Image (cartoon, rainbow, N blue to C red; front, side, top):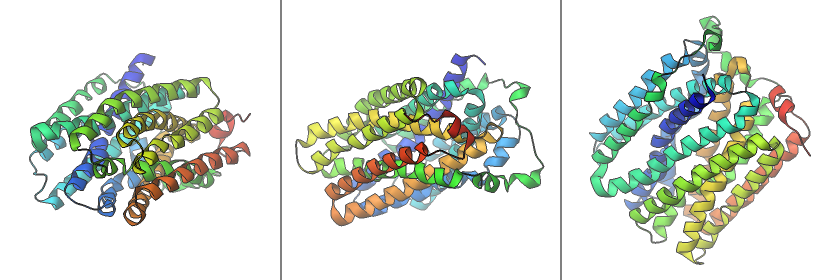
Length: 404
């Protein structure tokens, strides 16, 4: 495949993941807060994302059975169909049924992610991974912004059913690039005996250096997520209505998030891994400061606008840097399995961080929450860089890490 077709395909696949994820993590918490739920209860909905944390269990099967197109096409179609089904379920009634449907949505998206990540690792050469991860994060963040901003705005105008029909239409558009995917025979991974597939993830987890690497990337992400997961409810508590929140997240989030992904991809392509991770990680930490000032009552509305801009800009850059490092750590012969393991850890960390942030926010308020998150975010970034400066037992990371 040509470079352009690869990047368009990856952009569409990651946008298809980010769209529902953005709605569930950004729009839904605002709607729940508006309905009177506590931050702790809202953060407990992270259980709906359990498939993202457990997808490593079936990653070896997806990684070594059939072509990527054989997985991606039916999964993409299933996501669009399920959005149509969700449109027929009322928001306020039958919450158990609704949450069950959302859980199924995450099973589909998590499985699609395994196939997509494996495809990306195999199609992108090490020099191209920064650009490829820029496309990945850009597509995913655009999907999140559309899901968390545009869909929330549409909800205020056309309601639950109309909003989800728009989601279904957008997901249907992402099917089109998959129709043209043609994988050379050489791109197909070898198929080991079925009896080994289910235990394959454990062997990958026991690779020398993998345990410490997992701890480091988890720390890199924890502090930022602890605060960012509750920005929507905080905006509502500070007096903004859902329309204003949708405008801030949609208008600023879309442009800043895409700019951050593009800039992060360029930096990861041009700079050394160490430089990119350190600079982007510290900028991501700094992006929480305007929110802290807003929560303190200092120029609340301007600080929220500024915070939304820099959070999406620097957050996109830091995510590209981290995902590129994770791709370096993946063994090309077990691409989907290795990368999925690392992605699962990130999901688990984000869920723990969101819940911790909810408890802290309910108990102490937004100012202590943001202050603690800023400290943890900076610490996680510095720990990752300092530890990798001492070397890594993972060959892909050791080969690409160039401390100055």
